[in-house]
Length: 100
Image (cartoon, rainbow, N blue to C red; front, side, top):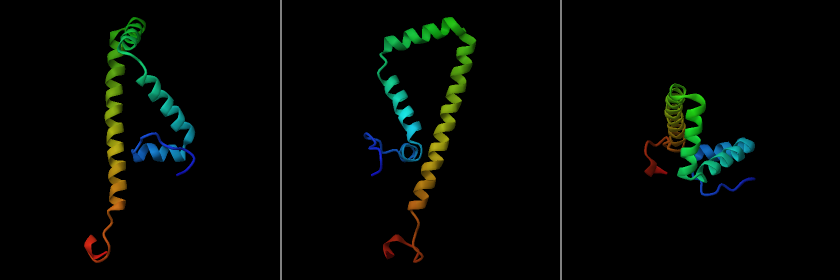
């Protein structure tokens, strides 16, 4: 399959990144694993420290921007997956798939 074995990942976008930009994929998986290993108590401590350092207005602005970014990433992923699925569902010239 290539240089990397993707651990249980069936996401086409992640597989594409893994094979085209292996360093980015390794960084991505490291960040994901770091956040998966945080307990709820550690999340609370991190949020309290951020609140003390930056204040509530800045954190609200960061949260809003992060949410908008996440929505945009979901839209891009959906359009990418639709484009990939459209390419695989090409009908033969006969008009239907049953003619194949």
